[in-house]
Length: 160
Image (tube, rainbow, N blue to C red):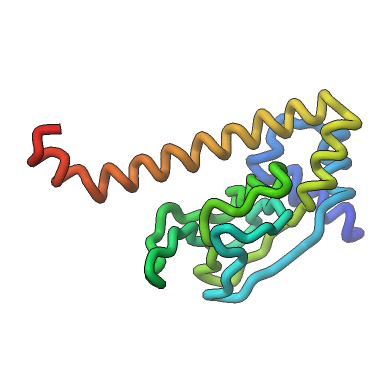
């Protein structure tokens, strides 16, 4: 099995690409890089101008907000999840800090390359952006639930 075929197999099995079809997966595979992160390694910090979007293949990643040097976990990602959706916004910093909770394996994609592919193939671009919008909605919901969990007793006592 070649590295390209292996990447295509990983992509075909990843929930993010479900239903995209072979040609779209081939296009993504041509842009993919296999990357790994060690336990406790910071993948990126909030505000970093990192242009990589990741599909997590193995391991777990904490999405955190850091305040006064203390990391507050907002969400935990694992194999089958996506990381770094803001890479396609080019020039926008990351919204969270991402830290590997254990050894992590992922497929990385340069945001600029993804945007160029979307512009050259609008049908592919629609599929990709639709999926990315789903990731954004999931992260907003996770943050909302975390806030409710943190502040609900206070809000409930105040009559809110």
